[in-house]
Image 1: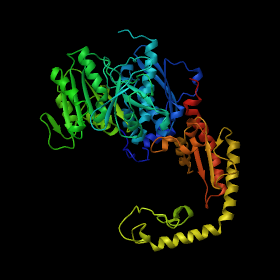
Image 2: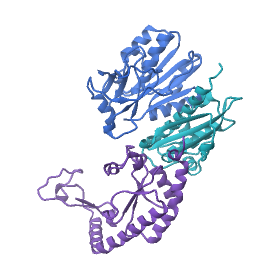
Image 3: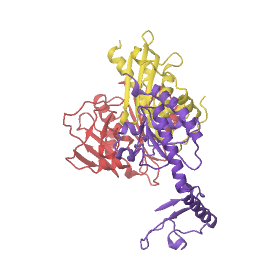
Image 4: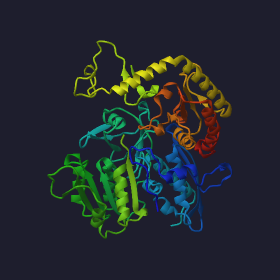
Length: 146
Length: 224
Length: 192
């Protein structure tokens, strides 16, 4: 399912076609955040570090699945592609349950991207953290029943 | 702050906090800030102390940041964040399968100590890889844990030495060996901690032998 | 002082070392006694001849070329500031190399700008941490007093003997849209 990675893990510069696709055609950007009512928001990173992500989720209360996962990212191509891919993973096939979404690892995001250079690993870590924060934000306002 | 020399090049820093010890879940980390080194975002270090011990992190001196930390003296201070992170199970009953290389053992030390105290019957299976016997961090603690608790198993792997102690395997940890050893232990959850490539290899390996993505937790250490 | 042959349009793989008499240097490459014991290995005569000629040509055109490049540089800087008012020039506007225009773009990141420029056929470089091997922002920019956040959004445009005004105009035609696009994506422009 994944294209053959063209990245060199470690020293290489080259990005896979999937990474380029998610960088030039990112999915699920939230352009109009002022008018968006989210169920949970996660913000990670900081401008001084060169990486910051904001993630907004909407949860289907009936089945506990993530219906929408929108975002904005300040960062390099790996950061943008990682957030885009994560938003896709969270919402495809009817959307992940919150329990499943909590288990998305940086490795899973990188695997779907076809690989990232090792020094870009933290971009996917941030993505994973942003989603966890958004879910935690949601759960702290909607105590689960059992 | 107190320092304890562990295995080669590895130091445990016991910390006392100006605002009192923070609460944390074993598996979490703190972010340490040394602004003079030009990394404003700081670096994360897993907590290695159990909640009933003084707060501590265990650092392997690899890069500029970690070397600076390892060379601090008792009484020195630095700024750190409150504990955070999601490298822990939300279940109280699953079998915890922990796979570590080198300094990746750090979060598992407190996970295991805390688990044994809270729920001695919970199965803990650790796979721990190092280059040589001398590199094994917390070796004595691990031995004692396994000896005192029937629910705890520790499997050591040594990759670069020839003469091995009994019970120690030579070579790398393989996903097949992990799954075979875990056998039919109930509800296993797999936690992998080590370098980026170690974690990646084992994540892929375990996936390829059928472990579901929702049973895999990872924490990778970048070289600091 | 060293000079790299490839930077003066000479052959790659050859350079020049200018050293005071009496200074002792340890060789990096050892073996034979070539080059006065400073670098072992049979000297490549074609490369040396090429480098010398490149140096002669560069010196012959130096003043004229510096003037030409300065004109291009100032044109580029002025136009860019018109089209992207929020861009900040790094360093002094006049007291800078004739061939260098270095800008920081608020709220967006250098490597992502570079990739989009590359996609459009423009080559540049960045002082952003994300593109550095050790993930630290350019210490030069920080020493100039810039804060880390802005340093992450910096791009260096360098001009040379073959740079034309048409090329600069092309770059200026694609850059504003890139900056706009990345601002749209950026978390720093969001109200959170």
